Amino acid sequence: MDIATLIGLVGAIGTIVMAIVIGGSAGMFVNVPSLIIVFGGTLMVTMMRSSMADFVGAVGVAGRSFGNPLEKPEDLIDKFVEYAELVRKDGMIALESKVGEEKNEYLKRGLEMLVDGKDKGFVQGQLTKDTEIMVIRHERGADVWSAIGDFGPAMGMIGTLVGLVQMLANMSDPKSIGPAMAVALLTTLYGAFLANIIAFPIQQKLKQRMVDETLNNELILTALNFMQDGGNPRVLADKLSIYLDPTTRAKKAGA
Image 1 (cartoon, rainbow, N blue to C red):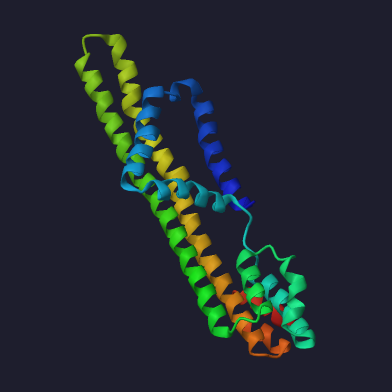
Image 2 (cartoon, rainbow, N blue to C red):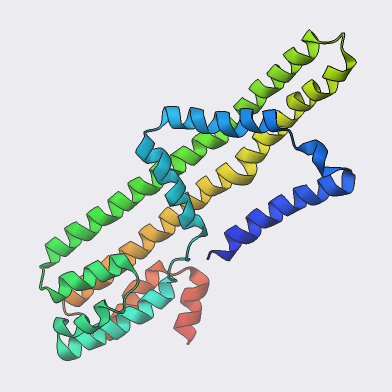
């Protein structure tokens, strides 16, 4: 579980709820027509501008922003130094024992190809294409969530106009003014909530995840190619240190 995503989401919602409770009754902020207009309308419009596969897939991709965090580059480097020493000693076939232990699917596919004796060009081509497809998948998911963030406030504005029309059409009935005004104001609130608390943070998280995963995949491919070239394991850590942030690189250099 990515703890930063969970804490951020719960904290943002908790802050708003706390302000509502302190300011008065929370029940006055619940309005079913407003919820239908904003959440139902936003989902329907988003579905209309997307393919069904992209729409459904965006929900699954969003789960990745809450899923297990990626391996740290420094952990991958330590792992590859171990693998390179094993290959140097016993050959590529020695990696077969590591394939079953590996949870990173991208790295697992790479190790399987090395064990199977695939040439360097084949490994490079397959794993590069794998990364390209991953990027496309993340971009499509992020695009759907971006659309939800755009349409949410727009549907809120539509709800506000609906509420105002209802209010102005029944000015002679004082009892109808309050409910109509609630629809007018709460739809704007719900639209802003949907966009800024849910949709845009998930979109940005997916983009960040895509960049981090792409860099990890590049690190993995570089290390696999290095092992296929028969490089010295002691040189591998230095070669891969370029993927570390300056602070971590300095710590590993001083270790």
